[in-house]
Length: 118
Image (cartoon, rainbow, N blue to C red; front, side, top):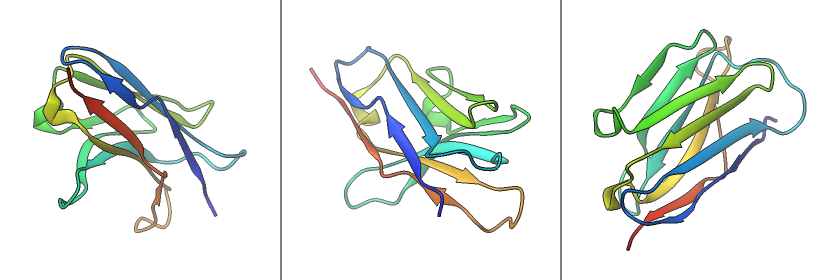
């Protein structure tokens, strides 16, 4: 069983920054895709950003230009630098990882709360 460990959430004022980190517990195979999703109560979990092992990134339109995803393949880790945060970015952020095979397999972290408020 793959366990993803997240860190870096918290409370920040509008316009501030946070950096989220995610890595698997223990040494395991390299993931093909790693990324971040977020969810607010009563709504579905939405894509924030993903990155392949070859550094191809995808962003939700709402975070383009403000958030930056990065990976460290040597550490099998993924990061999300969040700048110019807005109150509407408040959510639980979940790390996600998918292997090269099988394509329909994925794992989730436990979630980390990000609250943007003055």
